[in-house]
Length: 494
Ligand SMILES: *[C@@H]1O[C@H](CO)[C@@H](O)[C@H](O)[C@H]1NC(C)=O
Ligand SMILES: *[C@@H]1O[C@H](CO)[C@@H](O)[C@H](O)[C@H]1NC(C)=O
Ligand SMILES: *[C@@H]1O[C@H](CO)[C@@H](O)[C@H](O)[C@H]1NC(C)=O
Ligand SMILES: *[C@@H]1O[C@H](CO)[C@@H](O)[C@H](O)[C@H]1NC(C)=O
Ligand SMILES: *[C@@H]1O[C@H](CO)[C@@H](O)[C@H](O)[C@H]1NC(C)=O
Ligand SMILES: *[C@@H]1O[C@H](CO)[C@@H](O)[C@H](O)[C@H]1NC(C)=O
Image (cartoon, rainbow, N blue to C red; front, side):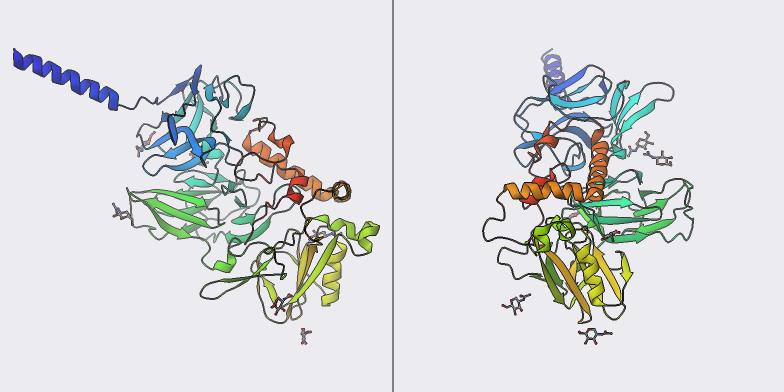
């Protein structure tokens, strides 16, 4: 009898223990779901898990003061997807995630929407698949997918995720991006609204086993379980195989590729206790824009050496502010104010094989063409080839070159000490600039629109679009107003 009681007691105990240990987190979110942020979870509050328990959707703490909705790889706590990396919500504050046909991250009164899945409101359930893909589905036979996180990557793609030309990877600091062209993928430096991006790495498909035919559908890239990044236009043999170190070694591992805050693209696999580096896109330090940063010269040595273009005392930041339109029209600038010019012999571009050039007869022609062009920030001329490379973005990727290369750089003329002061004059200049540089503004608007669209139409940025400065730790250049770009030193420092 005693034994039986003890046995029942044991059953009871283990049952309680199992119940307590069992993950209370749901595997399926249904209409009417709402979960409040509970700040007793210090780093991550899980809300939904995948069937294998490896991945979880939940509230992730960012830089102690902020919160984002994220899909985490639980064993490593690595966020594979984030909803609003550029503009995370405040950690304090009453945030909730709700599902009434579409997912909404908002404050509890829903007066501020931080993010919502850009799908219509007809979803029946939300699932996290064993691939880490978060899906809003409409039940039926078969169920249709209304929205999936795989189509909106942040800085990472994982095995079996299709990365298409509609998507873009953005490093968490928002300074670098990766996107697909029709037969290549490339990495870019992002300057935010009002500026073009600068390409610094390009991988073109070899097309050995399959051709990419323009007009025959979009290209997409995908990490294969054999350890490679493939480029495809249709299923079947890939048009390109970018092999990782473990390629074809039949490792049964989970792969990811991440665009880091240093601008490098790397692949890793999970070895059950750590992420192992398996591929690095850029191995030469001076080919990486973060090595020295803007307005500096990178010298390739055992240890890369960085010097400033200008011997300025405030780092390498006599910032160009895009105010160069003034050169042609404005009287003040015709007199030489507005920006200064720096010329240097023996400088080259690390990315010159990727940027456009025009062949010109002389150094003077190259430099004066840049001078007259309001979207030109600088130019490099090679007097051996006659090629004139013009930069339509702030000066980046400058390296030491031979004596036949001549650089011409527009620099913002900095009045001692008050470079950050916001004068009325500056505002007028900005206004003139916006009118004068219609192309620039339109391009910026287009970029902003695409970013807005990518983040979810009307997804609600909590009014921060209008405020100009993003509240987050990551300065959101794309959403920031032109003024804040000019007046803040949001650009990278070396
Ligand atoms: C993931 O789910 C699919 C079907 O939904 C299944 O075929 C596959 O084996 C699963 N993979 C893992 C690792 O559980
Ligand atoms: C990736 O694209 C292929 C081809 O269009 C498709 O068959 C497959 O279902 C897609 N995978 C995902 C996860 O969307
Ligand atoms: C995974 O990598 C770590 C770090 O290199 C190593 O210590 C560990 O032994 C590896 N684990 C397995 C299972 O290979
Ligand atoms: C920078 O300073 C060094 C040493 O003071 C000098 O040799 C060099 O010519 C300067 N360069 C420029 C561009 O002024
Ligand atoms: C100005 O330079 C940009 C590239 O820097 C070029 O695309 C544009 O056509 C040029 N504009 C004029 C008027 O030459
Ligand atoms: C290029 O410029 C250098 C320095 O001014 C000069 O010595 C050289 O003759 C020039 N080369 C050509 C082909 O013009």
